[in-house]
Length: 131
Length: 143
Image (cartoon, rainbow over all chains, first blue to last red; front, side):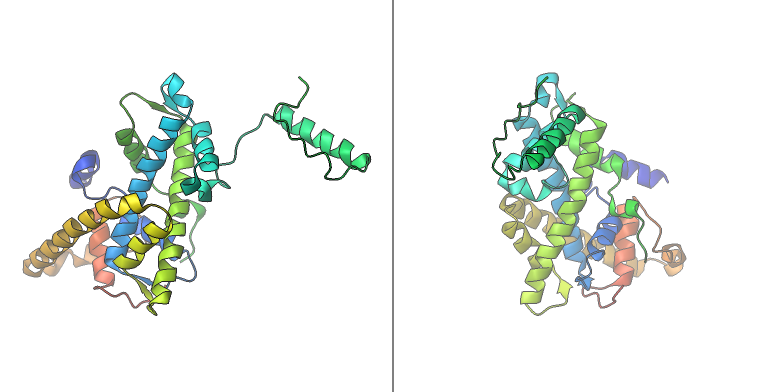
């Protein structure tokens, strides 16, 4: 549809780019919600756009990706961890860890368990793995 | 309506465009980053909805309204959004009013195209018309 193509390409001219129908589907997936008035739907869609912009620019500004002129997953994950406003994202944007480090962590935990040290060994040196 | 997992995602093309327009020219966005932002946006919608719903319940209302969403933004520490949202809302309301008046004059022959509400559409125009067919200002239907 020519009209749709024109609307999609003129990003800044539309009032909201995210499709209201999709936003509505997500909102309605919450069991406790019964009805949503049209204005509320619009505002949620618009707020989500503002949120995407904010998350992207904040992460870019505070992250290391910009050293290579990029926005990386790590920048986003960092934002979720460091910035209180975005902490609700921490679970879905976990920090990534090298598989080798993870395996070593597991080994260490196992060793500690065998020695019966339990929680005593809390020294969490991020770089405590032997390379 | 049973939602498939992808129905809770937002369209990649739109998300990508919003990100690109927000960042300086030429910044590369990894696919992983884009995907992560998209997921974050879905979570944001859920969080905002839940929060707004609390305000509606406090007001003993079953329908989420504009005020609930704005209150939710403050609650979620996104006060910075409130000003721009209010402005956008004004424009939106004017637009809607204009559309309603235009449609009253229009022939009803296009109604048959709007029957299938389960179709996913990227076109806001159709979305808004669908929403309006379904509800006036207060939506009473429980899905």
